[in-house]
Length: 276
Image 1 (cartoon, rainbow, N blue to C red):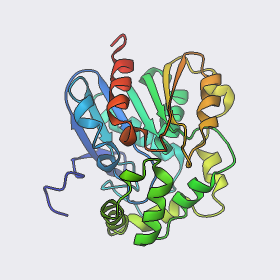
Image 2 (cartoon, rainbow, N blue to C red):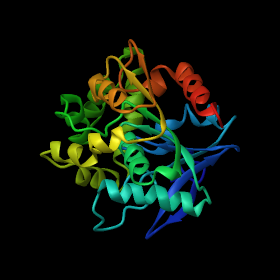
Image 3 (tube, helix red, strand yellow):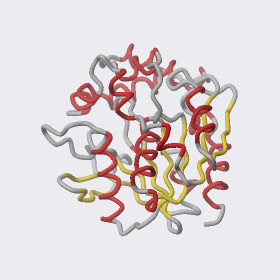
Image 4 (cartoon, rainbow, N blue to C red):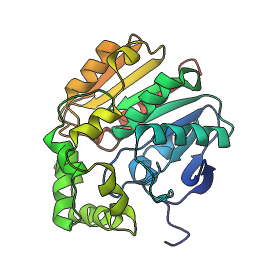
């Protein structure tokens, strides 16, 4: 890939492998954990968020191992614990004792698990269209995790992700399809969530008792028309977490940070700015 590819940031050693990470701005540290779509990278997921948040915060956005331009170690087991360990190793490598976390979908499950296991390392938590509880896997998530590369399959996936049809163009589908077939990308992705896929969703979940015990301030964000992660998951999270607030965007699918970018940025910045 060319050196000017915006998806490539700095390479940081995290345990036995290197993590591709974007590190922008100054101030209180905010760590962004992306979702698990085919061909995803931190930059692809957060490109509309990083510039806005980095005006007020130090924004750290890694490619989770197996995704994007981080390493794909041969024989690595794709488990929640591996991804939580990667985040902790990255924080240690960057000298970050405590961070705010914004987790998108799969990334929400990792953020939740980290807050449960290491509560002192997390100040505030934002969960957007988040996994992290057990629920019957949706048809939309089955399509996402069962993706087989083709332009048509990617075009169909974008229809699942977005409520706003104006966002779903052939140009975007071609761009995301090309990203999904970069060398090694689909090989690691298809190995992460093979059928039957309910078991992988359950393995990402924290227990209700663990979630209920969280002491953190938590902002939960969801699109009402989300076809990948049902709104009911966020309603359950809001019921379980004592210090939670819930914001639901109408006429919005799984892409809250894209379909409601301006509102999302202001909502998250205000929440993270409280008490900082």
